Every structure is written in C-alpha cells, then in structure tokens.
Length: 160
Image (cartoon, rainbow, N blue to C red; front, side, top):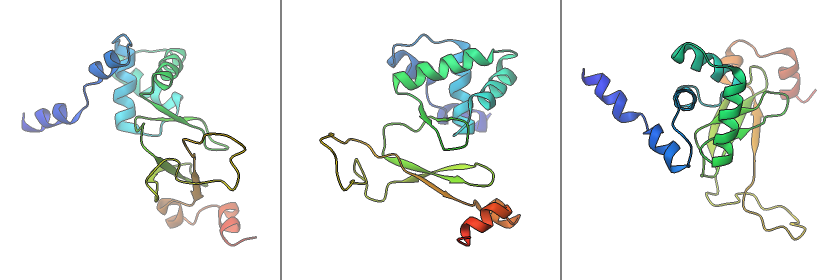
C-alpha cells in the first residue's frame, strides 16, 4: 500500500493538465500521457502499443491525433532526429537538447550549458528575432559502445 501511494503522488495530475490546456479528458489522452511519462522520447507506434496494453485497444490514428493536439497545446514536444521517426516527450518549456545514438537511436535529454534562450547565437540573424535553438548531439551510447557499435559508426568516430 505504501509504494502504491507514492506512485500516485509521483504521477502528475494528467487530467488537470488536459483541462488547463482546454482539452477534453479522455481515456486515450490519459493513456498517451501515462505512456510518455514511462517511455520518454517515444515514437507514435511505440506509444500506440503501450496505450493498447493499458486500454485494450486504441487506433494508431487516434494516437497520432492525440499527439498532434498535445504538441499544438504545448504539453508535449515533438523532436525529429534525422533518419529516425519523430519522437515525443513531456519535457517542454525549458531549454534542453538531445543526444541521439547513431547505432540504436536511443535519445537522451541534455541541459543547455548556457542556460538561457537561445543558448546558441548564430553569426548572422538575418533580421529574425531568435527565441530558441534546436541542438542534436550525435554519438554512440554506452550500450552500443559495449557491443562494439556498428562498422559505420566506428568509421565515423575514427574520421574515415
């Protein structure tokens, strides 16, 4: 009973989050938010599978629609690492970036080292008023390093 109470306290009030964003509270929306809280940096297919295991069934199209509504409402962030499916996360409104493994695609948050927006200043703004910089660092995660990475990844690291 004690650990169950802690789990409920640790889980954000997703229904209140939805209401605050002027979105209806539905089982599929709550399922997507719970899945993102557990998975972080998840693609729509993975989220759909997770929500299906929670609710019994949900269409992949519903998950895509829910994610689009969440991104528009600013309660979910969508990132698109080159060569990988779009990923979604609950961490929004701060100035963080991502590290992506070239081998397996694992994605990890990394805080901005400067700490204020934007954390990078381009050599020329061309008249734009800048408010954000999207940075993706690429490399080989510790798990893939232990497995030797891929030949292509090792060649990239060696400068070949």
